[in-house]
Figure 1 (tube, helix red, strand yellow):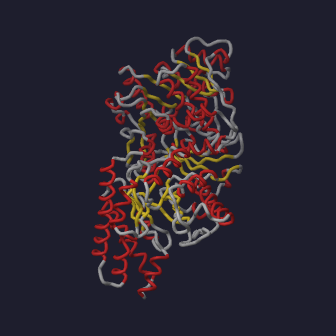
Figure 2 (cartoon, rainbow, N blue to C red):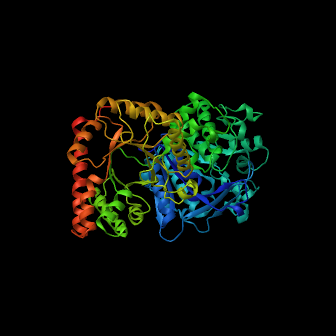
Figure 3 (cartoon, one colour):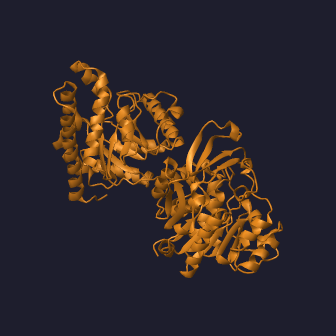
Length: 636
């Protein structure tokens, strides 16, 4: 068996109101996440280290592709995700009104996941998993119910475990109107009968008190649990909100407190939507890895606590590393989203994408190219088309392979930047006013609204001419700008690359770069990437890399800049940098494009020649880096 768990059922795009404390009617903007309980659980368990898969349907359109791409990025197996050529992907609009009201609207009329049918259940795929987990919604329609029952019977025949999250939404059983999506309980003998007809097929049944009320056919919680027990020998886990949960593996006692419980976590409630799916993810982690019920419920309660503390469903769930960090360090504030240390671990361990090697063509230059155009007497309007040729060179060399990228601006290089989207390339985008010291931002002071316009695959790149010997006013000015930019980037879910060049300010020694790196960590700036100038000694590289690793063990890494050095000098600097595994590669520009730009801008060479020249130089640098890494093997 290659998978730990397969979840089956709903898959949607959640559009979460970005404004907090108002009516859904007054929401002006929305954040887009993947959603639907089985989809959330597949991602939640994958973050905790389980090998998870999902069986669902998505539309043959942008939102369906979004779900599939996000699942892959989260490490979820998508073999069972079927693209429906006729139906649209489901959507859900959600809001946070206050601590108790969380309005939502389901857009699920004839949606793709409700077209799931028996033919979509591949026996070999079911046989690949140790567990099949389903949710109640897909028991509400004959077609989807047949698919779920087929999967459950196959799983049981294979000796796999089966689990049900009751996940009762009256709206999705046709018992409430479109505007009543928030309602969690309406009594229905029909729904109770439909559920009870399946309860004997499960080894684990999970629900809130209200969900056991519908499964048991009574609003007396203990009586409802006993009614379920009369039908099923499954372990029953009853979620009790801030009081945690109780697990009953045999008879039901005289109180919910008679069940097995795990440690609870009294956190501040920010958003309850998706909390149950986070809870279930933690529960499945413990259950499927053989933990006792007390430990399993500890996992579940903690994952639920994270979920209620953050915006969104899947984005709120912890990684396994984050969960262990939380258990070891303890809770510093009930408002977990305001715990900076915890949020850094959350961010760093849940980023998607992997870039073990970075071969970046940097053509984000603005001042240098504008000066060149002015010197040559040509229109600066030609710079944009030239940058598209730079992009063509990147694509030519990359050839669709991973580990390649570009740095390009949105002012002169807008067309190239837009064309690079969705190509599988790493994309960095500068924000500094070229040459400014103290640092000024080209995007202006209104960082939040400007960065909100960026695609989330863009990485903020900022260059700062900073030296430890700068005077206090210069340091304070530049540090404040970097800190504001870093915070705005995080708020907009954008990765951050900090480039520092001290050698243009004052003489440097083996400790200079390390001191700068430490200073930025001290003020609370945790770059996803560092861009550093070539350092002449191995000791300088050791000090820099050690400082990064000590402060941020999850940092994505370092790229080496070029400073228009000749290729031979760059090869030597690559050899020095490649000894350190934290250095992922290079980000070089003028060494590749400078001479070609002059010839192309004056009309001496055509587009094809310019592209080929830059591709050849870029390819040679890539080969030089790869050879340096191969020769050394990466030692630190």
